[in-house]
Length: 237
Image (cartoon, rainbow, N blue to C red; front, side):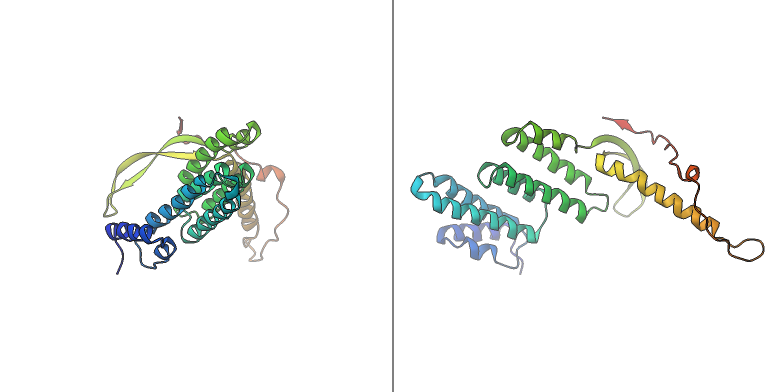
């Protein structure tokens, strides 16, 4: 039986009362596991804040390691962008510092992009992560780090697409925000050039009038040059 939100909170209260948070997050059937995981991590961070005396430095270091391991365990279950943001901000403020934080930001960005859960490049999630990363650099980093993030920020554009109702029927057009990342734009021309080269080679191999296959020759450079793209009626924000 799944544990719903109310029962999850009751389980959390009992776990806090009896110090059994580890047992709570180990429950396999939870429909809101993030509630318990977030509370467990927050609890450890609060305890970390309380370890301010010199005598508690070893305990603080050990607790910081536990927080880090909790984040890693949670990321084995979900790669939600907010988890990566929370993890990276923890490292910057209370963990291993800005260098450790940047490693988490990079991991999160790469993972979200590769998973591509929405099938469209996970652009909103990548944008959200970069925005949070930028704020982290402003608060904990330096000018060079901030500039590196700024160079990766996308250009936001208004576009239109076909809208569908719940039954899958077209109901007109809708506006949406698209994100053009510099790294994606740089790769796109190379992919189009490769596609044009393959099309040209296929055309040369077509059977001629005499029924013999024509060998493919080297494609002239001028035939493979990129043609200017037509405007898509995009409006920059």
